[in-house]
Image (cartoon, rainbow, N blue to C red; front, top):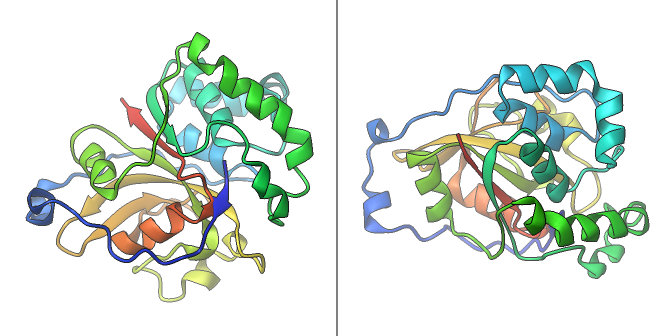
Length: 240
């Protein structure tokens, strides 16, 4: 889904075990980066990063046909990413606080032009997901759960408000990633989390807006961005 709420929630609470991890305890999941080509394909680009070489090339070599078959055109929702991953037999778990389309998003500038067009398709895809073997849970997840998955299992695709993304390694994040930022309060954008640094308390992620690069973002910045109103707190845990 996408967007909502801009209330700062403060630093996420972690267990003593996670708080006491040292930098060497964490690992980075190595992915082949893919930079998005359009203003709508950040989610698809994140999927391409977690797919194997053959499946990735299949999509890129047949992009127009693939998009038409999947039916999302230039408007991808998280459930669409799940259908892509499921099509290529990637194991995943999708958590969200809203199963379907939140009708309240009609008031959001980011959604007002696509909601009427997409609502039927998106709701139908949710309804049919279980019969297709997809693991989808109506639940919020904690930062601890995200870090634990990164530590022990694999990467994580998250929906964020791009206007709240940060990178401590960029001298000027906004000028570095200009296409992420808009004048509207919510701008839905997917990124792939690939690891974390427990010493600096930063999450490491790949942003499809930019060329091959691993960005660093404080835990609390990710928490604010991924729980903003409009995101539905959508998280896709990848099981390699």
